[in-house]
Length: 142
Image (cartoon, rainbow, N blue to C red; front, side, top):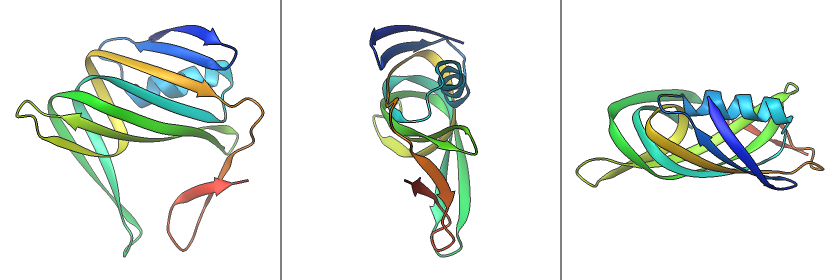
């Protein structure tokens, strides 16, 4: 699913296996390393991705799947804890073959080529999440 190298006490370089689903692999890595707070950045190539958009008026999520070869021009996000487990909050921008970009909150993405991530763990941080009734979002709880 992934290979990694620890480059500092709290910094990891990951290479995800081709055809792996990004959020699944990243969650498995966080589970393995017991990372409950941190940040993620990355690049790569995908063949399918589902983005999620919150409609603030209805507090309902709208998901849209894109099935085409795309380059990840930026993947960025954070890791926190919800219900005792790693909680990923990831955003992505992806470039299409016509050089236009799409992006948003990343729900899932299937690698087609490579995906390289940098994960920085915050081992002494306690960053939880709670569902905020006003916004419908899982916000930080300190």
